[in-house]
Image 1 (spheres, rainbow, N blue to C red):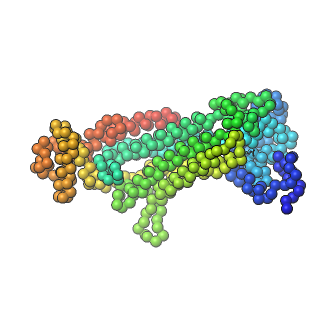
Image 2 (tube, protein in one colour):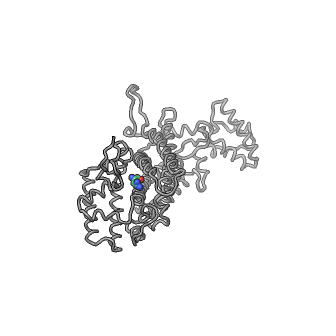
Image 3 (tube, helix red, strand yellow):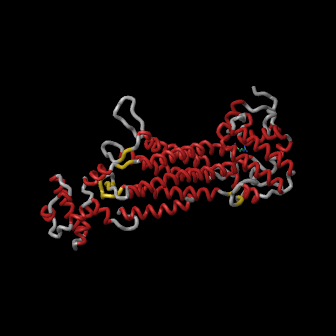
Amino acid sequence: MSDKTPDAIKPWGGRFSEATDAFVERFTASVTFDKRLYHHDINGSIAHATMLGKVGILSAQEVDAIVGGLEGIREDIVAGRFEWSVQLEDVHMNIESELTRRIGIAGKKLHTGRSRNDQVATDIRLYVRDEIDALVGTLARLQWALLDLAEREAETIMPGFTHLQTAQPITFGHHMMAWYEMLERDHGRLRDCRARLNQSPLGAAALAGTSYPIDREYTARLLGFTAATRNSLDSVSDRDFAIELAAAGSLLMTHLSRFSEELVLWTSSQFDFVDLPDRFCTGSSIMPQKKNPDVPELVRGKTGRVNGHLVALLTLMKSQPLAYNKDNQEDKEPLFDLIDTLRDCLKAYADMVPAIRPKKESLYNAALKGYATATDLADYLVRKGIAFRDAHEIVGKSVAYGIAQKKDLSAMSLQELQQFSSAIEQDVFAVLTLEGSVRARNHVGGTAPEQVRAAVERRREELRARIGV
Ligand code: ARG
């Protein structure tokens, strides 16, 4: 049996004749996780109160009392002195009711012309905006580290793969710049998401707007939004920005998972391409020789949870009728976890990338295996007037011979090569070297060291302009 006395603590208790069921109270509360929005909730409330003062709904003294009270609450929360109550359901009602306890009647006026629906929509936009800025900052640190590594290793030769089979020689710097390009697109997606979310829902109130003479553009400006949103129903129900961030985040994690997979392969003794310092690895409790690339492995694994949050958010919004529904409270945990995961994974990479040490000799020797310069020989024959398909056939036969003799193309004598085509002359050896092969791919986007350095320079200028150094 539930208590027949309505719960005096609930700001909405007026129309109720019995207390909330204890389980329902816990089931419907969000304060255990949405308290992390306190900072933005307070900023939103201060902007709202300031606007109410400007349009004459609150007196200057009331606004001062509200702002002072909220700043005091902020200090207490930061200092860990604030007592959150599940009975007060969420971050919004916890802060508002404490404000009223502290400043009295003025606290009860704060919610004039506002609803928790536009309040929470505002809070999460402000929160996501700040988090995107932080993510973009860490992403820039990672991008900067990749540019340095690419520049340092612009001449370092390694095998390039397709189908994970040796394809053509490339430079390590070129490979790092491929990673860079993926991240640069991620940056663009985060920036786009930020630009689209940067509008203020405040004033949409519960769903239809409010009968008070509020100034929505003013609160929007106070909160650093570019404008007020254009439709009150959409304002309180829209969570597109959360989905967009999750989508951008999933793609970013997909990229990090690809880098991770390569690092896991490259640090194995079978590849032996790079060394990761001990501080990014762990050992095995049973096999004394093990040094495991845990950081890349975990990042690869965490891609799953971010993808999961994207699906959770899409499914949360699917078929929701206008306008606000309590379902929307479920946006927070996926959103928070995906932001935490992105932040940690980007930090791990930004810290780790400067410490990646390519093993040059091993990379070079790997590029010597697998007939990586076969395409160069075919191109050479084409330059001597042979049709590409015929050249392909000639080189195929040379490779088959090499496999039988256990000899790379560059290790064959001129006579051996001439068995397959009389067009082959002494100058062939310049194109069969790994250095000659990479140097020849000297156009925008090619692997030649000169092009890698030019790409680093171009990207570094952009990044410099973005981060202001
Ligand atoms: N905790 C709620 C949420 O996160 C705040 C909005 C509640 N609005 C309401 N009408 N019950 O969505």
